Image (cartoon, rainbow, N blue to C red; front, side, top):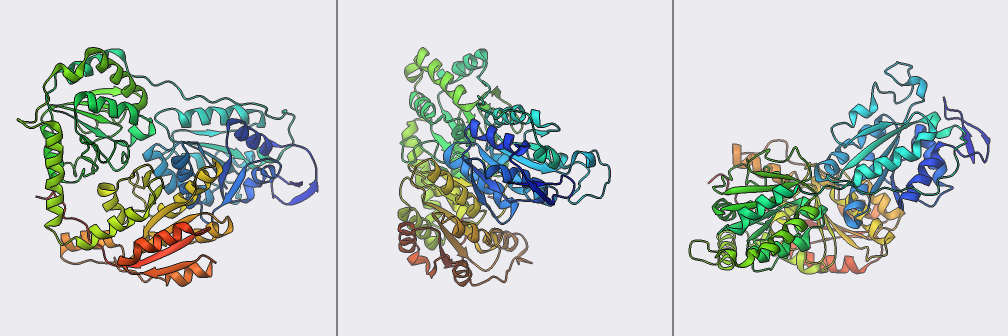
Length: 566
């Protein structure tokens, strides 16, 4: 192995002495980590040297923000903790937009960032490369907590604590900093043999469950909004049972997509931005909101004015009643819905009250609402868009996971995508561009690591794809089975549409862009350009191939007309 001078990181002499980097790697392995994402850097070399003696798989991205997206995608696809290694200063700062998405969406990650040597900390301007006044303060807005480790003996416990915090609801990324010399200096700490991290218990309070049951057992028109917390809490089984007991219509938010069976007779699917759905939810006499803040999209851009009582369940206490007053239950969604399901069964809620929506059954009401949404869409000039999304859905295998960038296709997907036995992932938490492809890379790596079918689909626009185009090199280097669909409309399509709608013209939305097919091929990645009518067949061929591939469609898609302005 090569040793380094802590001040300069210059090679000195070989030694077999273990160091702080070994403790990081050993602890992560003991906790169950299999894969790490990131980019090497001067102050982090101790981490990467130690990985050479361990069993962690390393996936080297080309931009740190994309490394964060990849660790996020790995976690979402597998349900495991994503692990990210960062260098100091610019490397750490570049990751923050990706971490904002993980933090907003509640994705468990452990982030290990290097730091300058201890002697330069405390805002003392030593003039060291990458030096910041307080690096971890930069991460405070996008991570659950931040730790600085100043002694190697503290590394195993700090990482174990961080892992515990990451998986405890509300889940999210946790930031650890280790100075360069702490990673490199020889240690006397024995090898890490075991580490244990168990999620902290977050059950609902008994009296709140009792009160919720009282409301629901006498409700005539109960309804349910299933947000992303439903999926993170693995509450799908309890949600289905509760909905069937109450005969309550269920709608999923974009983050909750897949939490409830799409074609169930009580499913309002995910048409959360349609006024017909807003009207129905406003008419509920008791509305159960799970893992959602009733924020901008879920509230149909804050036009939602419920007339009934609200029961809001969320692991994050700051979310409760942040937009609407109600019975706030701070709890993990899985634990809360399991308790609610058991309590409702105990009081015989299914037959306690006649469920009637002004003379119509809940099932009839759901069917009528979906028919109205369909009719509204068909009354607009959207045949191309409807067929395009249907062709993609038909091409994607039922169990395949999909990753969507902030692009018009994804906005359609928020409402119309039936994830079936797969999972739908998008960047709706923070809404940053560039998520789709690197997250899909992480997802595919994770699925392959856990022995599952690894092929995934990423969907981007031409604007968002340029944020992560360099990751074609990552996908090629690791032969990652990602099919990347790039919908090229020559600009920031959704912003163009917003500006034309608001001002009559668009400014600064048009983009010069590369020949995506030739660019992908220059990375050694197969690519093809097809018409919208050919997208389904092209995707099927891409799914059957080995390694990464790209499908480019040049077309201008429109969004369905907003209903919150009516």
